[in-house]
Image 1 (tube, rainbow, N blue to C red):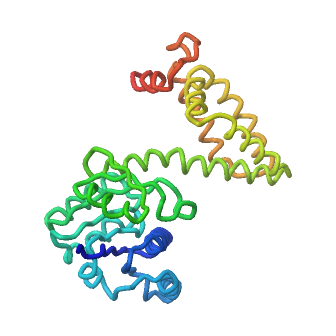
Image 2 (cartoon, rainbow, N blue to C red):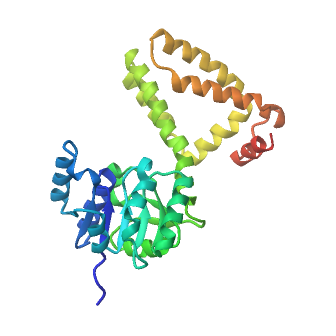
Image 3 (cartoon, helix red, strand yellow):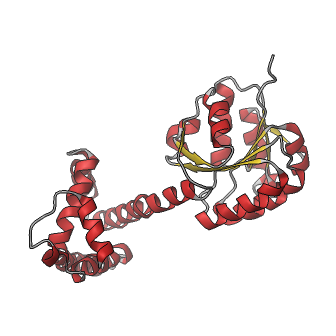
Length: 295
């Protein structure tokens, strides 16, 4: 009979605790964690309470964590992802699997892969593609690297949703980073719009209008429409943003995202895409991207 899978998390913040809660609820017998902040006078109490509530075993150090588990998943932060890997390296052996689930840059992931390789441990570049607060441990994960197949087989039995992508470590991270240009940008644009809407006393109306716009069509159609019509109408849209900027300035409202939108639309117009397509809206967004790359 095979031994039960033993999983440990480096970091017990929102991601580590969210995954732990879901894995334990789906039959994983035990989960370990090490968090450097567990002795912190401010954060330590919260981490210890969180571990007790979920049922996670906190280890006293990284060595104890590595000895106790088969799979180590780093869920610290992107800023310390490389340092997190360096801290566990002395205790990694060829029978261990090390996965980085931080939102680190492709270069940082490649550096971690180089650091892990001499230990013989299998490495996984894992990119979490949805909010843990909404999806918990079932948030979709894109993974690549020497240990990705194994990680998927081990954790899918407990409900985790891991999709493999081809490529060296850094590929999954690049996919997430580039998607974040849109996802985090959308968050920032929405925040700016709603702060302005609240100032003018129309927040409910504006929010409902945005929801109607976003919900009306499948995003594949909406996204294609925005990119293809941008090729023809970017100058008009850039000029229309001048009125939006004036509205925000009259209300003394921060305008950083609106100003950036105006700049990006002007950039698109200056490429001459309207002339390139003869004033006709192309059918597919890929045509627009190819035209931009050619210029």
